[in-house]
Structure formats: structure tokens, C-alpha cells
Length: 203
Ligand SMILES: C[S@@+](CC[C@H](N)C(=O)[O-])C[C@H]1O[C@@H](n2cnc3c(N)ncnc32)[C@H](O)[C@@H]1O
Image (cartoon, rainbow, N blue to C red; front, side):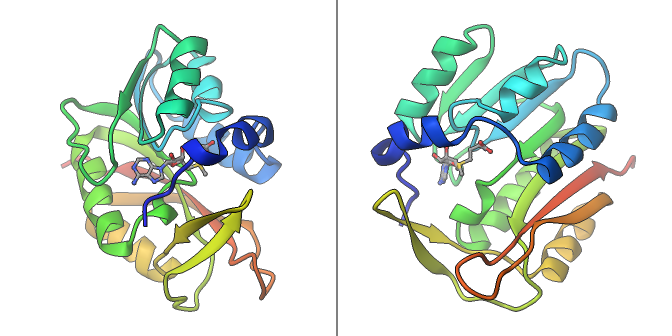
């Protein structure tokens, strides 16, 4: 089941305006390690607020990829000097190399096998020393894929456990700069959220 943000776009545009403080801290770490005028790939960019906007404000160039026409239309209108690609993350083949890649709050909408494929493509598309920032589920328990309701619509979620995810990343040649829970699981609806800042090793 693919995440359909078109059907909740009005709610989403209203709800998603700022980054929570813990997310912001990780983004500052990521941004602090990027060279000036970096080229950044934002996978599951949504309408470009707040993430792409924040990064663009540092002078970097964004290539955003998302499956929601409605959210991308907003991003294109607000940030016409950047590139916005309508594509399924599962089908996306990076045609370029990037200084930084963002997979924020989008990875968990894909099944784990597709997440691993996307992480592999991202690791390959990064320049040496390139930075990756991603979020994932924040649990050490192996929670099976599940669905949840958002604004009256059903969304699919899946995540590796924290240790599985970090192991996959290091096996892909990505060094963990920082990994932190940005949401703590509450044992009920909130399964927690992990934020990770990684850097591609120089080979
Ligand atoms: C929770 S939103 C996060 C948006 C943005 N990264 C942010 O942090 O504000 C998830 C985004 O991932 C996109 N998405 C989810 N599954 C996708 C898929 N299979 N292919 C492309 N985009 C996808 C959705 O359309 C949505 O814009």
C-alpha cells in the first residue's frame, strides 16, 4: 500500500510547517558538515517545508523526489529554482552524485526490502565524505509492518529495528556520526522515531 499524501495534502500543508527541536538539532549537524553550494537529494521531499526550505536557505541546491503531485506542485511553485521529480522512491535511479541526501520521515512508508534498496542507491549516489540524514522507526523491538490512520486515511509503516538499520548503513560504507531518538516510543500508537546522520567513508 503506497502512501497517498495527495488525499491529505490540505491537512498536511497545514500540519507540516516546522521541525521539532530534536529533528532540528540533527539537521544542524548535517548542514554543518556540507560543503558550500552543495547538491542535495531529498527523497520523499513532500512540499519542501520545512526540510528543503531549511537546506536551501543555506545556499544549497535541492533535487526533490516524491510521489505526490499535489505536494510537489506546492514545492515547485514556492522554490522554482530547485528541481522537483515526480517518482516512486522504489523506481528512482539517481542520475547524479550528491554532497548530501535526505530521507526524512519517508523511509518508513516503504517495506523494509525497498528501504534497503533505496539506502544502497543513496550510498552509491553520495560523493566521498557525502552526508546522509534519515529517520526511521525508533524501536529495538522487531515490530511487524502496520497501518495507521492519518487525517482519516490509512498509511503503511515499516522499519528495521535500530540495530538492524545501523548495521545496514555501516555495511553500505556509511559511518554513523550521530544516531538519536527524536520521538520516544510510548508503548502505544507512537512507535518512536530515530534520526541518524551518516557520512560516506572515503574509499
Ligand atoms: C511524512 S511525509 C515527509 C515529507 C518531508 N520529508 C518532511 O519531512 O516534511 C512523507 C513523504 O514521503 C512521500 N512518499 C511516501 N512514500 C513514497 C514513495 N513510495 N515514493 C515517493 N514518495 C513517497 C510522501 O508522498 C510524503 O511526501
